[in-house]
Length: 342
Image (cartoon, rainbow, N blue to C red; front, side, top):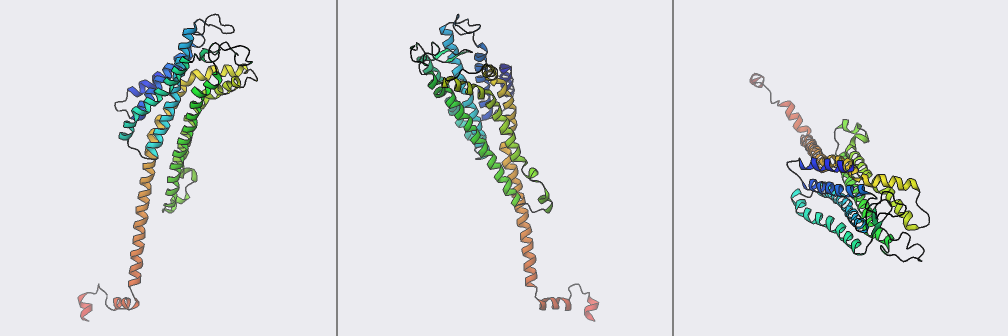
């Protein structure tokens, strides 16, 4: 299902005649998901055959190393997600032009490729990719060689540190970076709506509820929750599992390992769901500020016009003295010739 979701996302993007920068980011995200989803799908097969306590292990040390290498490349997914959040922030709040964003796109894509590729090569050199029970990834070999210190590690020394330095550190940095981006977008839209409330001059507009006046900010908040929920549901249980493995105080419960095995490979379908949200989010987030600002400008002009009309009437009243009013009564402008002659 994860691969299918990624393929559907890529197909939807490639079908577009004109693609913007965020379409290119989504396309690379879909490719990253296809690669990582296939790697997660292999599960225990690449683990060396005969490994104790591992079902369906059919590989060798070389296949396990290659498997861990490609799984490490999945770090491109959170990097691309963070780039998308930065794109929405730049396009909506800071009104950065699409032309300028396209010039920055190659540098963004290069960084999202260099970071996972660099950590994967480093893990390859340090022989960090070994049996990790459900798949091959950063782990020590033999298992538990760092726990008591009595058994020297043949491969994967300092695996606990490398997991956080090479993957979970950047992963959760990306997560909180995306939260900051969406909070800034939300505050931007909310600030414009608050300005609109101060410019409401039609009495009936004041009777609207706060929910009606805040429909854009509420919409941004809901979309952000859906967007971040797809990311959070994929990696939350895996992070807790790594916490158990790092602490070495207690073995992780079976239910946690089972849920992790289900949620981590599902990132492709999760990102496809998020893609539907992203498409709607971009189509509105870039336009919402323009729409509200146009209303703000319209109400501002209306208020200025009404203020100028009130000023003119006040000036006329001030300029018309009682003597002038008496003269107007004595000499009406609409007097006909016969009345004037009399």
